[in-house]
Amino acid sequence: MINTQDILETIKMIRQENLDIRTVTMGISLLDCIDSDIDKACNKVYDKITRLAENHVKVSENIEKRYGIPIINKRISVTPIAFLAGATSSNPVKLALALERAADTTGVNFIGGYGALVHKGFSVGDKALIESIPEALSITSKVCSSVNIGSTHAGINMDAVRLMGEIIIKAAEATADNSCFGAAKIVVFCNAVEDNPFMAGAFHGTGEPDCVINVGVSGPGVVRSAVQKLPNADIGEIAECIKRTAFKITRMGQLVGTEAAKALGIPFGIVDLSLAPTPAVGDSVAYILEEIGLEKCGAYGTTAALALLNDAVKKGGVMASSQVGGLSGAFIPVSEDAGMIEAVKAGALSLEKLEAMTAVCSVGLDMVVVPGDTPADIISAIIADEAAIGMVNNKTTAVRVIPAIGMKEGDILEFGGLFGSGPVMSVNRFSPKKFIERGGRIPAPLQSLKN
Image (cartoon, rainbow, N blue to C red):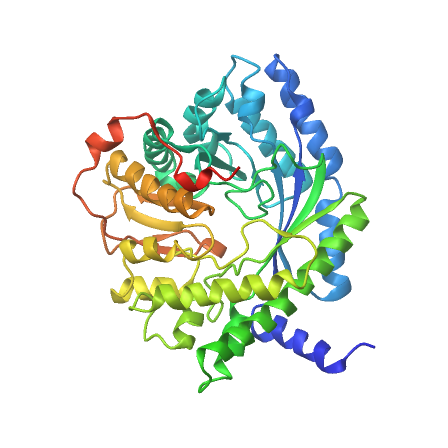
C-alpha cells in the first residue's frame, strides 16, 4: 500500500531540500565505429549516437512530468575516443566535432569520453588524442574529457602524469576568455570506473553493453535536513539517520533509471549514490559536515566526519538498488558547493586538507581553482599525489583543477550555473620538477597481488 506520509516527505525533499536526479546518462559503445578513414568514423559516430539517443531527452522530460521529479541533466558517455583515434593518422579533433554535433542534435547537456586509458602506457592514438584535448575542448561547448593515468593493478604512468599537467595548463589558456572552462572539462583519474554517469569524467567502458542507462542522484540538502533534526544524537545515531535518508534518495534514482531504460528499450545499468552538491544555498556536502558538529568545513575532524558520511551513504544506498555502481559516495567539488566556497574564503579549508579528505570520499580534488601562473610540474605533482591515494587505497581518485589565467590567490573565477564560482586557492610553490621529469612508472603496490 502507498504510504501518504512517504509521498508528502518526498514532495518536501524536492521542493524545500533540493532533491533531484542530477543526471540520466546514456552510455554508448563506439567500438563498431572505428575506421581508418576519420571522416567515415565521424559519420558513424554521429549516426550511432543520434540514432540511439534520439529520444533520450524526451523520455527523461516525460519522467519528470509523470513523477514530478526534477532531472537536472541529460547526458551521453561514449567509448574513450583514443580507441578510434588509433585507427587513423588524422587529427582527432574531427571526432570531437562529431561528438559536439551529436550532442546538439540529441539536446543533451554534455557528452563525455574524449579521452584515453593510459595507466600502463600509451597505445597507438593515445598521445595524439591527449595532445589534441586543449584544442578540442576550446572549440566545443559540450564535449568532456577524461584520462586514466593509474590503477592499483598497474601503478602510475608518470609520463602521462607529466603530460596531463601541461595539457591542463594549455586547456585553461585556450579558454582564458571563457573562465578557463576547458580545464573544468578535464578529469584525470586513477582507477577510473566504466559506468560513471557524472561529468566531466564519464566514459563508456569497454566491458559495458552496447547501450545502457546510468543514473546519478543528488540530495545533500535532504541529508543535511535529516541530520539537523538530531541536535543531541550521538555519532552512531547520525550514521543511522544518513543511511535511512540515502535509502530514500536511491530508491528515487532506481525508479527513474528503470523507467528510462524501459521507455528507451535498453538495459538499466546502475544508480550512482554520490551526493552531488550545487551552489544553491543548503545543497552542500560541507553543510552536512558542519551540521554533524564542525564549526567550519576544514576544521580538524572534517576527514573523520566525511568518512562517516561517505560510509553511511554507501550502506543506505546499496540496500535501495540492485544495481549500484559509478563512484557512489560524497563529492567535494569546491566551486560547486556553497559551503566549500565559504570555507575556502574563511581560510578554514586548504588544498592540503582537501587532499586528506579525498582519502575517504568519492573521487578527489574536484573543481579546484589555482593561480594562473602555477607551473605545469606542480599541476602534475598534484595529480601524482591524488593518484597515489587511489592506487594504494584501491579506490577511484581524480583531479579536476583549473588554473585561473591572469588571476592570483584570493580572486574569484566565475563559472555560472551548476559550476558555481571558484576561489583561487594557494598552492605550495616548492618545486617537484625533477621528480616529475624523471618519467617512467610508479610500480603497483603490494596489495595489487591478490591472486
